[in-house]
Image (cartoon, rainbow, N blue to C red; front, side, top):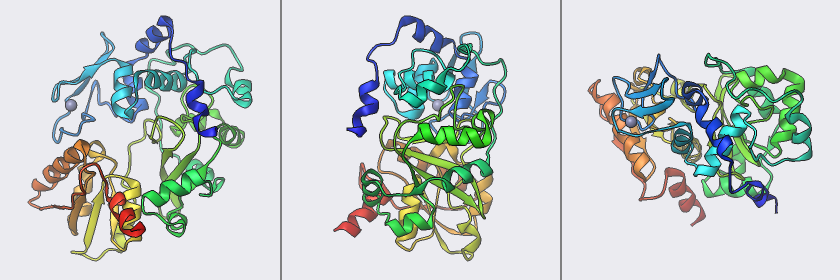
Amino acid sequence: MRRTSTKAAMPTQLSDQTLARLRELPMAEVAAAMGIILRGSKAMCFNGHDTASPSFTVSKTRNTWKCFGCGEHGDAIALVRKIHGLGFIDACNWLCSHFGVAGSDVPPSRLARSIARPTKPQSVVPSTSVPSNRPDPELYGWLTAHCGPVKASLGINYLQAHGISPELALKFGIVELVNPTKAYLKLEKHWGAERIRAAGLSGSRRALSWYGYALLFPFKSGAATEYLQVRCLESSMKFFGPSGIPKPMFNRERLRQLRKGGLLHICEGVPDAVAMEGAGFAAVAVLGATSFRSEWVEELLPFDLVGVPDGDTAGEKFMKCLANEFRARSKSVRFAIPPEGMDASDVIARGKNA
Ligand SMILES: [Zn+2]
């Protein structure tokens, strides 16, 4: 079965040598690869408790990270586990694949093998400076334009379970990417490897940074696609966003069409916002408490705000973060809290499928 092929290829053991190399990857680069933007050695903590000053710190001498707010700490592997919600082996594999460390078990399809190492293996430490990735609307737009509408049952079922009809998916430009290996080759032919890497879609390995079938959710700004969220449906990593690119607000354009005082839902996930729009509610999505930017407060102030967190602990952090951000401006935010363990789109899907 295609669905299990990725898993089957995973080794259950990594050599001590590979582990040591992963732990030597420069901490700042690992953090950047996961969208943590360091100022010097500090950043806002991914746990979302920071509102004013950053508590997440990287130690160059020890090559570790620690948060002085919540006390979490660890090495590169621990950070990938936290941020991508992966197990130990999967986190190691992600690092191997992203930084081109041998020992990765990325499914060795024939195509992948033929392009994987055209020259001698790259050094584990690509450079001393953090590569400066930047959003690439042209490339993101080209990629989504070369994917098709969601047709595979894997994708159709996912959308349906999240209350998103095929028509609604089309309206929001949600597409399916069936074969990342082929897609990478096409992208490389058209744009070159360096540009794909700078757009945050690949690491030092010449391959996209995710495996298997995935849905792409474009973040539109006018005709431009300023960001992509990848929902992986065949890999243990659920979501992927371009590495080193700050996450924008999803459906931000909606703010321009909404009258002052209009009801606006702030969801935690992209599928939630799409499902709410489908149900006739104005909605934007902010990808987790850590991605909320203080400059968005100003844009959101004119509206009647309802926060829609997931019914889990991350949802509680999201709620606290929103409440804090707006309290400073004496603005109250109401919350629509889904039953425990559910998110807004689950509730909408349940209503629809009932
Ligand atoms: Zn923290």
